[in-house]
Image (cartoon, rainbow over the protein chains, first blue to last red):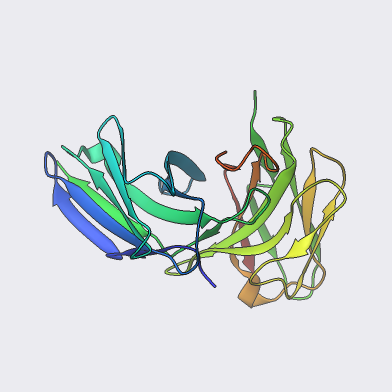
Length: 111
Length: 116
């Protein structure tokens, strides 16, 4: 079972616009993590939100978590062409457990 | 500090051939993971090793074996490659365990494998 399913599958926006993507998960988690993958590269950690947090900011990133709905959202404000990438979420339920990802949201930011 | 290093970066195999994908991390992480990534499928967990000396199956283990050689190295072996194993393979590591709930995973750059 996946611990992260993102939507939309693809998002195309222009520079300066905001990009919002959502993540749903199936079981209880202790934290939810977002990662970015540039084309042909490995995943890079962006931000982590704990289950007792509702919102967290890091630079132009804003992530929310609604544990009652088992969902999270990632907002990238004032997007740049360099934000073009795929974005993945993954939930963690225990400190030793595996990290499972969804199919990701592919974001294309055009200048 | 190299992080997670995977070798090789690219490989072409013929059906039925065997090969081992190597992964090493220099961050003293205890947990390591192997994923495959196919178009439209995201990352799927093949095997993972929560700590040195243990390995467990992920979602798609069939056709693969792993070895946690030591704390640094976690290899993935294809005994008899099939075209369905054409994919990009990623290794990752993380500091796990008590007190380490909120640590992030670090990924290698991937191995692009084609089986013909």
